[in-house]
Amino acid sequence: MNTVVEVVDKIRDTAASHNRLFFIEVMGRDAGMIAIYSGIASGAEAVLIPETDTKIEQIVKILDRGWERKKSSMIVIVAEGDVAGGAYEIAKEVKARFNQYDTRVSVLGHMQRGGTPTCADRVLASRLGVSAVEGLLEGRSNQMVGVINDQITFTSYSDVVNGKKEFPYQLLKIAEVLSL
Image (cartoon, one colour):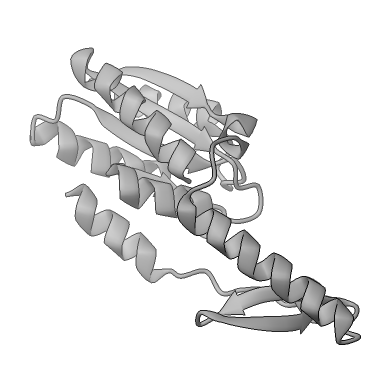
């Protein structure tokens, strides 16, 4: 997500200087977590995720509101698994109804996977690695080590595979409020 935010910040500089609307596609075939977190952090005007139905009319309404407020540019983050299609398809549909800006698309793809680990990443990896070895030495097997509420936990693989984490829908409201 840090890589996405860094790239979006650079794209925003270009977008603002050239009155552009950018649709930026991020990883997220089945889940919109990268999109929603990076959309909030980068100040995107809209975030499109697989967990919700995308309505082109709603996107146009958001963009019209920004146009009326004389925004020099706008950013829309699109998770690759959004039900309305990828960033290219969505941008084409939006441009047919809203052409006040020069519209561009950027697909970040696997570039997002790179990047130097943060201090928090490194500490987390160390905690999990040590706990995994300790778990093996205790005879644990067929379990995943993780962190819940800042506590190391072991979860059976069957629970991991069969469980589905609830999407934090309150983040959509935060993204909407911050885009105003």
